[in-house]
Image: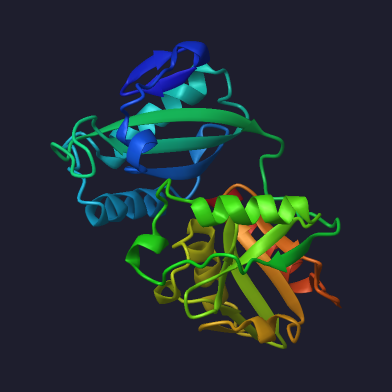
Length: 281
């Protein structure tokens, strides 16, 4: 079952028109959210990112779009799919209403909510080999639009195809200044000694929810220095550890880039702290 503007529909009946602006012009935003046993993780951060993104896209935010309303709408779909006692991936999409060509007739919005079951209630470290490459065919602009979750993801799609065709597990993306900013589906962290580095939002990386959580965690760990600073491709092979993050997977260690292999000690430690926060939160 899928939620279309507050009404529940079976998957096969949950249809959008060909003139839908999200489909026709990429005039849409989305949040990928993890729900554990009916509890939405990091909902406050998701909500404020969504509201900020809607303002950037000049969408009209309905008065009904309170945190409580959207939470109820998501849980309604989780419940009707009999997943309240499971871990669930929720995709909340917002698109501008149909009308106009490039220029919309108005800025009102509609929403859809869909769910899929996840395997584990907590984040699990993947110890298997995970090799990445550098995607250099196209670049991401280091501006405000690149930091939001819109459905204009052509670079990510092409990077995914490139990685798959060349037997890599993921690819790292570059901005127009040729700095490494993120993986296809998550933020990037680099570990060198006791320093942990991640690209700043101003470089054009997604303002990831798990990125935000880890920065808060790292601020309280006195044995690490956290830096938000540009990462050049040359730094990747000098690192002790690389890992990517997103709200569904948690922390994914990168085991190999070119001829360099990496440890995952810091990833394991941070994952333990993250899971503790999830349990207590």
